[in-house]
Image 1 (cartoon, rainbow, N blue to C red):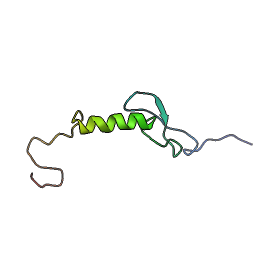
Image 2 (cartoon, one colour):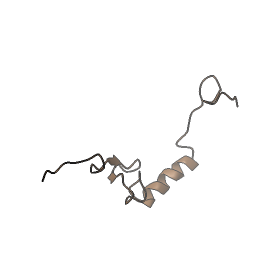
Image 3 (cartoon, rainbow, N blue to C red):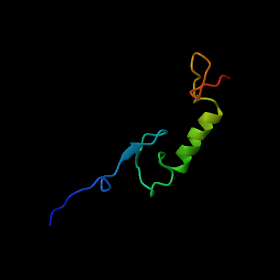
Image 4 (cartoon, rainbow, N blue to C red):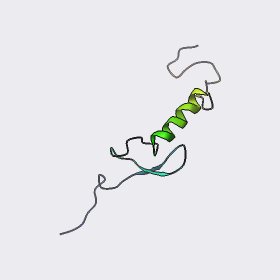
Length: 68
């Protein structure tokens, strides 16, 4: 019997965006890509405080062609 791995057998590990802890990318990781609810809430708070922003393109148009 041979022991072969399929792409489903490999587990992707990603860093938590808040603390950097390794998080397996699987359905068992409830808060992915975060390691915990705490890190998820810290990131959400940063968005609410406008520490994270999605910048507008320089020409003032969005990707769908509409202007603001």
